[in-house]
Image 1 (spheres, rainbow, N blue to C red):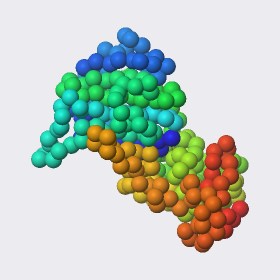
Image 2: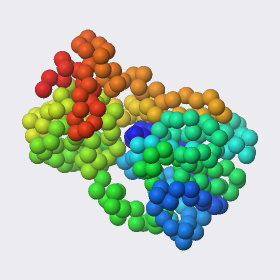
Image 3: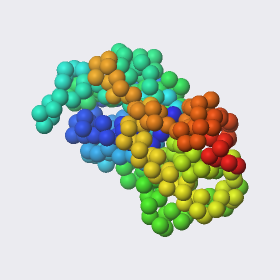
Image 4: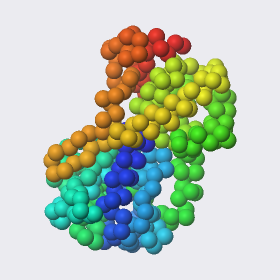
Length: 300
């Protein structure tokens, strides 16, 4: 599933390519993926003025006071295709014809639309944004910008990880963890506790904090909770710097995936030696999620 670093990387990449351009038309190929009706489509025919992110949700603000909200869920993709332009020149730099992010599949570099394409946005310069999703769990909404904070998903979200540097915010999150009987892996995956943390980075943060993923929140010391929240912030910052794990930036058919997995300490390294102590990394299931940890560094 695309997590915070992947969505942040998509946000940054689209910012240079679509801000200032206007949506000219919308074509919905899968109604289940579009949380709006035909009548609402007229509200999206406007210039894209800003791109934001809240947790794992990508938000395109429009000049007319409306916004597009995208949630990629497990297999969603956003693909910008400027193929009709051949190339873009800005500040004497050549930009890619295609830019894609999300769940990595051949759709990122292949001919679009394809069988995974759910919604197509055509821009005023002939370029297009494709919303692809193999499993149809993702969605796009058209909402008044001022109503975003009232969205059922957004209003329940916890703070962004970067806000954990604020003592008051950190204290509130610490109290929620300390008062919970759930396993810590499940707690930090809860978007109502911290926004944007997913399976990959939860495993990594728990490793750096030397906390076993099955430890109950109520059993953690204040020092351990502090260490974990610091690790969450650090891991997500590092992952964003490496383009995440599932991010792919395509120029024609040549792509380079996000590089964080090359640097992962435990995630998807079961059976391999721990980079810190040499013990064998194990994989278990916590809250129905595959979970990776070092049995020596992360003692229960």
